[in-house]
Image 1 (cartoon, rainbow, N blue to C red):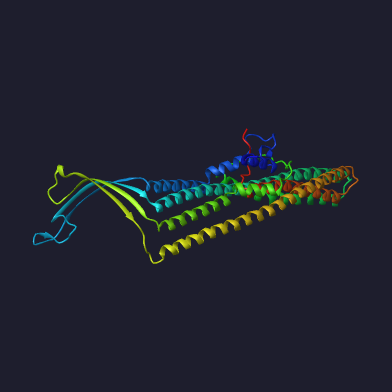
Image 2 (tube, rainbow, N blue to C red):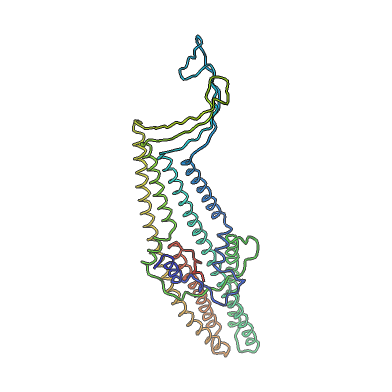
Length: 434
C-alpha cells in the first residue's frame, strides 16, 4: 500500500474525511475544512514560512552559481618609483604599468563550494518542512477554536431549549395555582427553575461570544460576522490501530522531517569542514593588455592561468572544526531520537484520550436516553398533577445536564481524533479527492 493510500485510510479511520459533517449542513455554514483553509491563507506565520522558503531558494541558486564560470573586468594603473632609471620592484614592467583585461574564471575543483551548494539545498528543504510544520500548528489552533465554539454553541442551544420548556411549565403552574390545583411552593419552585436556567444561559453566552471572536480572528473574518458552524456528528468509525498511527507519524510528521533536514544539513557542514583540507584548482582566461608603454590595439592578447592551492598546515584549526561538525551531526541524530520518543509518547497519551472520549460518548448517550425518558414521564405526571415541582426540577436538571454532557462528549470525541491526526502529521480536514 502506498503512502498516500495509507494517509487516506488513516483520515477515514479517524473520521476526518467528508463524512465529518452531515449531509444536511448548509453551504453557507462554516466547516472545519473551510476554517482551516482560510487560516492557512490569511495567517502571517504561514506567509512568513513561505518567504523563508523563497529566501532559502535564492540562497541555493546563489551557492550553485559559485560553481559556474564568472566573467569580470580588471583594469588599473600602477606607478613605480625608479632608481637610476630602473624600477625598484622586480614585478614591475616599468615606471608605469597599464592593465585592462576581461577575465573568465572557471572553478575546476572546488570541494568547499560543492559542500556549500549542498548545504544550501538542505536548508531549502528544511524551510519547506517548516512550512508544513507551520501549517500543522495553524490547523491545531483553528481546530481547538472551532470545536470550542461548537461546544459553546451547543451549550447555548441546550440552555435555550431548557428555557423555553421552563417558561411553558411556569405558565402551566401559574394556571394551576390560579385554579387551586398547584401550591405556592410549586409556583416558587417553577420560578426558581426558570431563574436557574437563565443564569446558566447568561454564563454560557459570553463564553460563546469570546470563542466566536477567537475563531473569527484566526480565520481572517476579523470584525465581519462569522457564519454559523456546520453541525457536528458523533464519530461512526472505530479508531485505527496505534501501530498504524505510529507508522504514519514516522512518515508524515513534519517535525521529524525537519529533524532529518537538520541532520543532513549538519552532514553537509561536516563535508564543508573536511573540504578545507583538499586542494582547489581553478583556471583563468584573460584577454586585454598589460603594458608599460602607451596602450595600442596591437598589444591586446590572450592570457591563461592555471592555479593550484593546497593547504599544508593550519595549526589544527581544520581538525578542530571537523571534530565540532562531527559532534553536531551526532547531536542532531540524538535530537531526532528524543523528538521521535516525544511524538510517540504524545500519540500514546492522545490515543488513550481518544479511547476514553469514545467510551464517555457512549455512556453519555445512554445516560441521555434515560434522562430524557425520566424527564418526559415526570413532565407528564406534573401536568397531570401526580408529580411535584421539585421532582420536575430534578428531572429537568438531569435532562439538561445529560444533554450538555452528550454534546460535549461528541465534540471531545471529534477533537481527540483531530489531535491524533495532528500528532500523525495530517491536517484535521485532510480528505481524499474525488
